Amino acid sequence: MLGKTANGLFWMYRYLERAENTARLIETGQRIALTRSGASDLEWRPVLQTAGVYDAYLAAHQDVTKDAAIDWLLRSKDNPSSVIHCIAAARQNARLVRTALTHEVWEATNGAHMRAQHLLARKVGERDLPAVLGTIRQATSLVRGATHGTMLRNDIYDFARIGTFLERADNTARILDVKYYVLLPSVTSIGSSLDNVQWETILRSVSARGGFRMEYGNSYEPQDIAKFLILDRRMPRSLAFCVRKLRDNLGYLVECYGKRPEAWHKADHIDRAYLSHTIDTIFDYGLHEFIQRLLDLLSELGAQIEKDYRFYE
Image 1: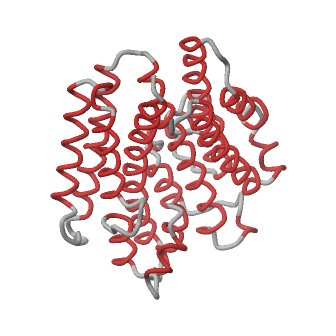
Image 2: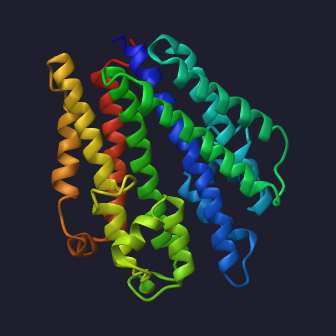
């Protein structure tokens, strides 16, 4: 496979995952704001920080307001991580690798783009926001479903999965980190009994509420939630699950191409050195430090994948 084709597949699915994650993040911000007394527009600063766009937002706006933050995350052309920008970028990459996709995947991607363009053509009102976010999530899910249902399990599929799980791992880590160190009243509150509604909202943001309740019941203990989102290999958005899938798909590429690149070793190192511990060990290390280290390693892994498979050649 040409490096440019691998690059297009990788980024197509990263952008789709990012669009869905951003939509979930906006919904999370709304829910958290509704559960806190004396909520203000500043409640949206953590949401912007989680999305990694806070500094860029401040460069374009004087103050953090709810309406401006939501519009920046949904529609802003100046925000490369906005939902409308991500879906447009995913479609553009899909066009570049059109011959590598099935008809169903292309139609689902093009349909997601058209729906996003229609829904986000103008500023979204608060009353319409839940329906718009739900439609965006559904549209990206249709692409994922078409991929699983129609794509041959070859190197094309592997690069699509690698892009998906790298983006997903990054998102889960950011949400968990910001919850502990920005949304909490103080660092001393870590591990204490916190408002169940807020923790439930965080689980909802990564589609983990149902699975968590099956495993732990209705008790939302922070340490259990951290364990579930970091170490549970059955939960499709946990860090351990995502990194294991990254290693597996990189391993399938090893079988396909007959060469074990540095990227596989990096993924294997993350899994063995960081995601094979107990949650108590992680807390002793420092949750914030642990997650920041993982984010750095995931960024390095992404750069190594681009290098190993010559994405720009």
